[in-house]
Amino acid sequence: GLDVLCCNAAVMHHADLVTADGFDVQMQTNQLGHHVLVCRLWPALAAAAERRGEARVVMHSSEAKHIDGMNGSIMHPPSWGARLQPEYFEKHAAGELGGEGWPVPGKIMFFHGPKHTRYFQSKLANYVYTYALKDKLEAAGSKIKAMVCHPGVCKTRLIESGPQTNGYDIGETIAFEPMMMSVDDGAQAIIRSCLEEDIQSGDFLGPARPAYPCRFWGPAEKLPMEDFLLEPEQKELVVAKSEEATGVKLEVQ
Image (cartoon, rainbow, N blue to C red; front, side, top):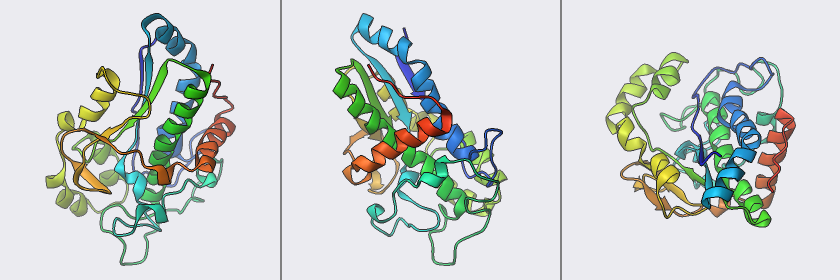
């Protein structure tokens, strides 16, 4: 059996290119691939849950799920813009999801532009998918748990392989770097989600400082579930579009 499936792989701020399968590289890496892993490894998770009383699926989201690079801002209520859009899960030609352009002046300095919008959609998908999975688990009476976490902002290779090499101003990244935590500190939430004894299905862990919705650093804490992101149609959309894109159905028993 498989005790923990930790869905952590991600890319960030890549160009508007498609994979060999025809999908946005950020969405396929950050969400669609994880959907396939969850579905394919379900028998191993179920076996562990039956043998040892529980198993876990941990999704690694981001506070970027609040910030649409083209239409949102950390100065706006996140509920204004944080909605999944079906076109980000669909096959398309390169350049059809915003291209490489920049928004008009007046948007926030760091998390802006269509590259960030594509990343935002994938990380919001991770969050919503967790709670869609939780609903299915509870309906089936499963012993498998689903939880989600975010790392804050950390000095990982994600920054090096994303913004610094894909057209963002390196000066902005350097200016932001003093606010970043170490990789070890940023890993607290995902480690606790995987291993802590009293974690419950639906728990959301991550840094809470300085304040919502800009929770960029600090020790990992249990955070309130963000209901405004979890409308029923949003949970239905993330599962349906993930299934449609991959041809793999999420069957929870």
